[in-house]
Image (cartoon, rainbow, N blue to C red; front, side, top):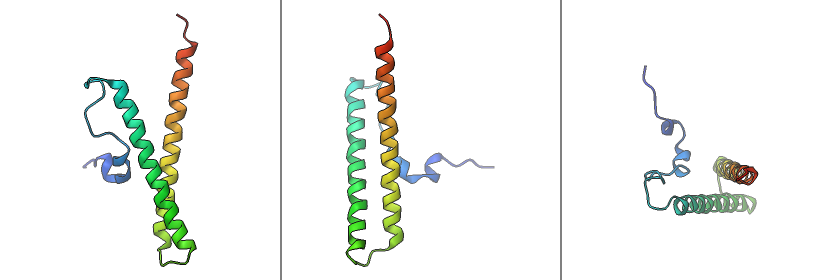
Length: 102
């Protein structure tokens, strides 16, 4: 029995996960985390704009396959849900740090 890698099942997750070495090994972990969030937001924005342009083209009557528009809309929705969950976790971690007593 062979076990396939996770990337084989979900190629869209490759754009979300970092491919470089871990931030701990580099010089400034905070800058890497900020850059990772910024890159993720940039990809999210591009995905939403792409889905919106496909939807507008379909609404204008252009010959756009419906399944392509639906796939791009669903990808944008899933990326948005992922970023909202990341934000929730960051806020939760910040609140936990604020509750700590010195």
